[in-house]
Length: 217
Image 1 (cartoon, one colour):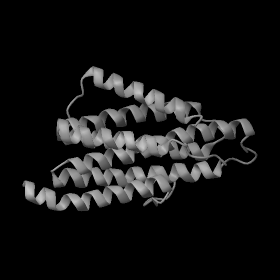
Image 2 (tube, helix red, strand yellow; image 1 turned 60 degrees about the vertical axis):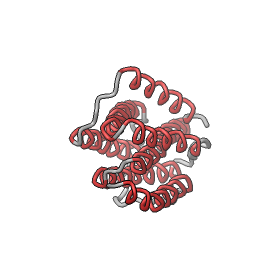
Image 3 (cartoon, one colour; image 1 turned 180 degrees about the horizontal axis):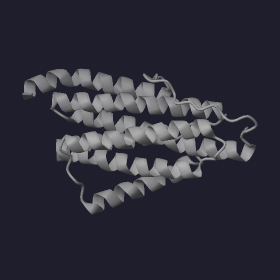
Image 4 (cartoon, one colour; image 1 turned 45 degrees about the vertical axis):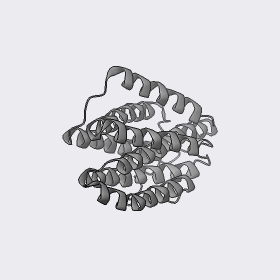
């Protein structure tokens, strides 16, 4: 894509990104796939303590999906490769399913999203935009791989931590985990660069701050 074509389409991409941000933060994204569902066994009602714990974990997962939306949207805005942009936006739509599922499950658990979601979105969007513009598409895809790998590990941990009786949350998290693995593999096939260890360590540290904070705020 030449510079004139890129500039002429930039306003359209900005509008799309702004619309996605508003829908993401306002709860306006609607899933394209039905929410994974597994009915609880008879007599397996959640205790108040288990409901609180599940709400905290699903709030963390909801924040993770807020960040995924922002990261993919920032990367899609940055790239000049139309096919890569289409891939990133497709992944963003699939992550939008996760976001909607987590939001629904939070409501069912009588819990709430993080109060800091605008902050999480802004930070992840800036990271995606910076990675795409300053480092190029291969490094940008490297961020996708590392992010999805970390999220997959994080979701595996949640499957260990969620109450066994909360089969509905566990069904959602299990499907999300499978999707994250697929997104990482797709980014690798597109030529993702391996990020240097200091960058991966910094991403893990930032994720730790986010997950710890989101549990309570």
